[in-house]
Length: 224
Length: 224
DNA sequence: AGAACTACCGTACAGTGTAAAGGTAGCGGC
DNA sequence: GCCGCTACCTTTACACTGTACGGTAGTTCT
Image (cartoon, rainbow over all chains, first blue to last red; front, side, top):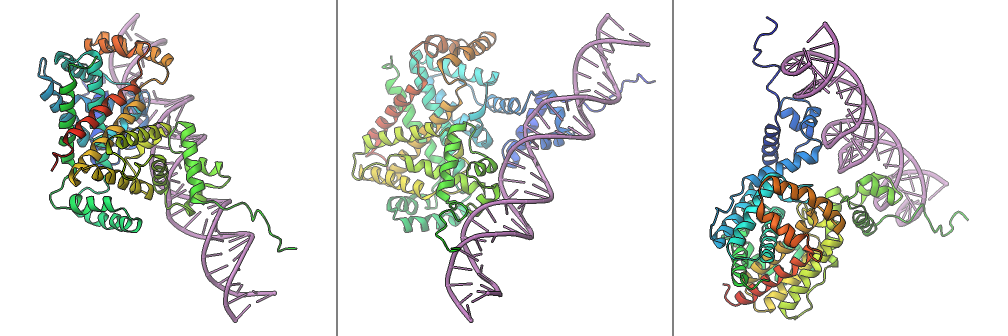
């Protein structure tokens, strides 16, 4: 009777995937970035040091988290037309970075790209090559689009307001600075654009993306 | 004799500027990002809590540091032609971010822009407006260029190697992954481009910048 | 039965930001 | 002279971080 099935040997053992899922979820909710090992362990009903059995250190954990984000991004379908495919991918990447705001800052420290990341990059490059880009041209296009999307996500995240209500409070302070320091152009942009009811900084994304994709189309066959 | 000049009342008192200068210098040298309050204080011959007399909290300190970086960036000269001026500014910004790699990641958390930052933005917008961009057009151009430069800096910083020697070591691991996981396009790009002797990822910067400035020139008068 | 291995826990340490309070030097006013 | 006042810095303390080290149940292999 001591060898009964024992449905919960103590609890169902942790898996890498379960830990990463919980970590991503906590990071998304809290808005405070990657959770601490202790908090993450608590949420999993376990003590902090148990996590080190599944991840060499915290960096390995965050690497796994970013790879999970990459897995969410829409891959270009095989043989798809490069132009709409790149547009879709850029939007998808941007939305993933918006869902997981901690991820854009994390790019920095990611020590090594995970499998989803590599697969993602391969598909994108493949799509570009199929669309007539040379190897060097595909590298140009890839670097350009990615830099833009990451940079945009970073900027969007660093805006000092989230809602329109916030905006008005913050705006007063900035407007004051602008009046004090004689910054007429900035002031103009605020009063005539940014503070107007319908303005949404997020819409700048499409404008820039259009310009970039258009430029790529124009250079596609010239490069190299 | 008790009222002598006393050249060192105990020591010359700290100033905000001195603290910020030391902090930036430490961050640049160490490569480990913003120093801790204790380490920074040590370097200044002072105890950690003394710093809180000059900065409300650490965030205020990092805000000051980023503002100091902005102060290094070349401003467009008054009335300068927008095209070369924007190119120079983008290069200057990128080089500042390369000198201070911790700064690009810090963009994120900067709570409020300092005076140098605001002055910088004002000058850039002014140059664009003077070059015939509408308010909305200048906003488009500004958002696009900045996103690109920040994103590029972020990517460049996240490359898993620094020197060509490092590269070869890392490459073997990645090549192995690529072979295992069937990533032919990525493999091709590595063998035919990235691992070739003369290749320098940094040169991609100019390619993308050209494309963007060209697109801006093309749309300058159409926008809005 | 004993050994080896897996998965987890307890404890401990050095490091972090910072709140609270205290000290001390230099000052102007009585 | 002395009394506060302010500017600057220190001491102490607390809650929190990542993680090294060693231990301990339970399972599996021999």
